[in-house]
Length: 120
Image (cartoon, rainbow, N blue to C red):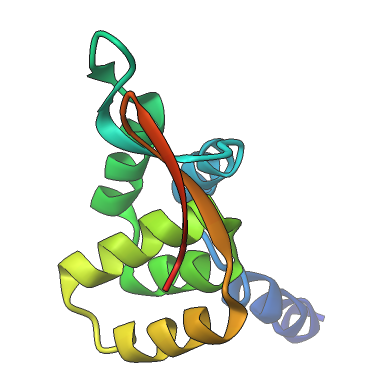
């Protein structure tokens, strides 16, 4: 009976893509509809979206970043790919090819100037 319950639990633990702490930050980042620079608005206050990105970048593993880069909304994909680029991961080439094929658009806010762009 113990063996059976152990075998049932293996897929649950193995396929959990994000740790609870990263998942909480991922959910907050997913709520945003635009990519923001570190300083935004008329008075250039720190962006809470960018702060969330920095927190994820600090604690997420390479595999978690790759998962977010392929499965998140365009905002999450942008920040995850930025972290992947900063870490110089080998998966960057495949990720760029994936973005070229899917052509997702994203809204960007840098300071007080907004624009629209594509992931690749």
